[in-house]
Length: 178
Image (cartoon, rainbow, N blue to C red; front, side):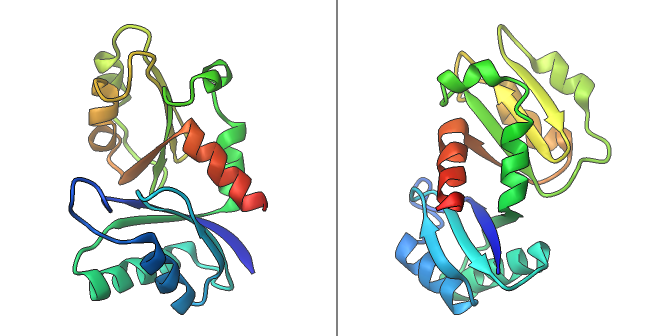
Protein backbone atom coordinates (compact mmCIF):
# COMPACT_ATOMS: atom_id res chain seq x y z
CA UNK A 1 0.00 0.00 0.00
CA UNK A 2 1.14 3.52 -0.80
CA UNK A 3 0.38 6.52 1.39
CA UNK A 4 -1.15 9.46 -0.50
CA UNK A 5 -2.37 12.96 0.08
CA UNK A 6 -5.19 14.21 -2.15
CA UNK A 7 -5.67 17.96 -2.46
CA UNK A 8 -8.95 19.13 -3.96
CA UNK A 9 -9.47 22.58 -5.41
CA UNK A 10 -12.86 24.15 -5.81
CA UNK A 11 -14.96 22.15 -3.37
CA UNK A 12 -17.14 23.55 -0.59
CA UNK A 13 -16.20 27.14 -1.41
CA UNK A 14 -18.86 29.83 -1.65
CA UNK A 15 -21.74 27.38 -1.79
CA UNK A 16 -20.60 25.67 -4.99
CA UNK A 17 -18.92 22.34 -5.51
CA UNK A 18 -20.56 20.76 -2.48
CA UNK A 19 -18.83 17.58 -1.41
CA UNK A 20 -19.36 16.63 2.24
CA UNK A 21 -16.28 15.00 3.75
CA UNK A 22 -18.27 11.89 4.77
CA UNK A 23 -19.16 11.40 1.12
CA UNK A 24 -15.55 12.00 0.06
CA UNK A 25 -14.38 9.33 2.50
CA UNK A 26 -16.98 6.88 1.15
CA UNK A 27 -16.01 7.69 -2.46
CA UNK A 28 -12.32 7.08 -1.76
CA UNK A 29 -13.06 3.85 0.09
CA UNK A 30 -15.18 2.62 -2.83
CA UNK A 31 -12.16 3.27 -5.08
CA UNK A 32 -10.12 0.96 -2.83
CA UNK A 33 -8.55 3.49 -0.45
CA UNK A 34 -7.88 2.43 3.11
CA UNK A 35 -7.44 4.42 6.35
CA UNK A 36 -9.02 7.54 4.79
CA UNK A 37 -8.88 10.68 6.88
CA UNK A 38 -9.85 14.22 5.89
CA UNK A 39 -8.76 17.60 7.14
CA UNK A 40 -11.01 20.66 6.87
CA UNK A 41 -14.03 20.94 4.62
CA UNK A 42 -12.06 22.44 1.73
CA UNK A 43 -10.74 19.11 0.52
CA UNK A 44 -7.69 17.43 1.97
CA UNK A 45 -7.48 13.67 2.38
CA UNK A 46 -4.78 11.28 3.55
CA UNK A 47 -5.20 7.62 2.65
CA UNK A 48 -3.52 4.42 1.55
CA UNK A 49 -4.01 2.76 -1.83
CA UNK A 50 -2.57 -0.12 -3.80
CA UNK A 51 -2.68 2.06 -6.95
CA UNK A 52 0.84 3.04 -8.00
CA UNK A 53 -0.04 5.61 -10.67
CA UNK A 54 -0.87 8.92 -8.96
CA UNK A 55 -2.21 10.56 -12.14
CA UNK A 56 -4.50 7.60 -12.79
CA UNK A 57 -5.73 7.72 -9.19
CA UNK A 58 -6.37 11.46 -9.47
CA UNK A 59 -8.38 10.89 -12.66
CA UNK A 60 -10.45 8.14 -11.06
CA UNK A 61 -11.29 10.36 -8.10
CA UNK A 62 -12.27 13.32 -10.30
CA UNK A 63 -14.40 11.05 -12.50
CA UNK A 64 -16.27 9.71 -9.48
CA UNK A 65 -16.95 13.23 -8.19
CA UNK A 66 -18.36 14.18 -11.61
CA UNK A 67 -20.53 11.07 -11.68
CA UNK A 68 -21.89 11.50 -8.16
CA UNK A 69 -21.94 15.28 -7.70
CA UNK A 70 -22.02 16.79 -11.18
CA UNK A 71 -18.88 18.90 -11.05
CA UNK A 72 -15.19 18.26 -11.69
CA UNK A 73 -12.76 19.47 -9.06
CA UNK A 74 -9.04 19.73 -9.71
CA UNK A 75 -7.60 16.79 -7.75
CA UNK A 76 -3.89 16.55 -7.09
CA UNK A 77 -2.68 13.28 -5.60
CA UNK A 78 0.85 13.06 -4.24
CA UNK A 79 2.80 10.54 -2.25
CA UNK A 80 3.54 11.25 1.38
CA UNK A 81 7.25 11.43 0.49
CA UNK A 82 6.53 14.29 -1.96
CA UNK A 83 4.86 16.24 0.85
CA UNK A 84 7.88 15.55 3.08
CA UNK A 85 10.18 16.82 0.33
CA UNK A 86 8.11 19.99 -0.13
CA UNK A 87 8.33 20.70 3.59
CA UNK A 88 12.07 20.00 3.70
CA UNK A 89 12.68 22.32 0.73
CA UNK A 90 10.86 25.28 2.30
CA UNK A 91 13.09 28.26 1.37
CA UNK A 92 11.51 30.46 4.09
CA UNK A 93 11.98 28.49 7.34
CA UNK A 94 11.70 31.62 9.45
CA UNK A 95 8.14 32.13 8.13
CA UNK A 96 6.71 28.97 9.71
CA UNK A 97 6.09 30.91 12.93
CA UNK A 98 3.20 32.67 11.14
CA UNK A 99 1.71 29.73 9.24
CA UNK A 100 -1.16 31.65 7.64
CA UNK A 101 1.33 33.81 5.73
CA UNK A 102 3.35 30.97 4.23
CA UNK A 103 1.69 29.09 1.37
CA UNK A 104 2.73 26.18 -0.79
CA UNK A 105 1.22 25.93 -4.24
CA UNK A 106 1.30 22.30 -5.34
CA UNK A 107 1.55 22.12 -9.11
CA UNK A 108 0.26 19.35 -11.35
CA UNK A 109 3.74 19.16 -12.92
CA UNK A 110 7.01 21.07 -13.11
CA UNK A 111 6.37 24.20 -15.23
CA UNK A 112 8.10 24.12 -18.61
CA UNK A 113 8.05 27.87 -19.32
CA UNK A 114 7.12 29.77 -16.15
CA UNK A 115 7.04 33.54 -16.52
CA UNK A 116 9.28 34.27 -13.54
CA UNK A 117 10.04 37.78 -14.80
CA UNK A 118 6.36 38.74 -14.68
CA UNK A 119 5.95 37.12 -11.27
CA UNK A 120 8.90 39.12 -10.00
CA UNK A 121 7.32 42.32 -11.33
CA UNK A 122 4.22 41.62 -9.20
CA UNK A 123 6.21 41.30 -5.98
CA UNK A 124 5.49 44.11 -3.53
CA UNK A 125 6.66 44.96 -0.05
CA UNK A 126 8.06 42.04 1.90
CA UNK A 127 6.36 39.35 -0.20
CA UNK A 128 8.68 36.75 -1.68
CA UNK A 129 8.39 33.54 -3.65
CA UNK A 130 10.37 30.61 -4.98
CA UNK A 131 9.61 27.87 -7.42
CA UNK A 132 11.28 24.60 -6.49
CA UNK A 133 10.32 21.74 -8.77
CA UNK A 134 6.56 21.46 -8.72
CA UNK A 135 6.03 23.55 -5.59
CA UNK A 136 5.49 27.32 -5.58
CA UNK A 137 6.40 28.77 -2.18
CA UNK A 138 4.88 32.13 -1.28
CA UNK A 139 5.57 34.11 1.86
CA UNK A 140 3.14 37.04 1.99
CA UNK A 141 3.47 38.84 5.35
CA UNK A 142 0.73 41.32 4.36
CA UNK A 143 -1.62 38.42 3.61
CA UNK A 144 -2.27 36.19 0.64
CA UNK A 145 -5.72 37.64 -0.04
CA UNK A 146 -4.23 40.91 -1.31
CA UNK A 147 -1.20 39.38 -2.98
CA UNK A 148 -0.91 39.75 -6.75
CA UNK A 149 1.67 36.97 -6.59
CA UNK A 150 -0.97 34.64 -5.21
CA UNK A 151 -3.66 35.78 -7.63
CA UNK A 152 -1.52 35.39 -10.76
CA UNK A 153 0.82 32.51 -9.94
CA UNK A 154 -1.08 29.70 -11.63
CA UNK A 155 -1.53 31.63 -14.88
CA UNK A 156 2.11 32.75 -14.98
CA UNK A 157 3.46 29.33 -14.07
CA UNK A 158 1.28 27.74 -16.74
CA UNK A 159 0.39 24.67 -14.67
CA UNK A 160 -2.72 23.84 -12.60
CA UNK A 161 -2.06 24.56 -8.92
CA UNK A 162 -3.75 24.11 -5.58
CA UNK A 163 -2.56 26.13 -2.61
CA UNK A 164 -2.32 25.29 1.10
CA UNK A 165 -1.01 27.34 4.01
CA UNK A 166 1.75 26.04 6.24
CA UNK A 167 -0.66 25.07 9.03
CA UNK A 168 -2.57 22.78 6.66
CA UNK A 169 0.61 21.36 5.12
CA UNK A 170 1.97 20.60 8.60
CA UNK A 171 -1.28 18.95 9.67
CA UNK A 172 -1.32 16.79 6.53
CA UNK A 173 2.25 15.77 7.29
CA UNK A 174 1.24 14.76 10.82
CA UNK A 175 -1.75 12.80 9.49
CA UNK A 176 0.42 10.98 6.97
CA UNK A 177 2.65 9.77 9.81
CA UNK A 178 -0.21 8.54 12.01
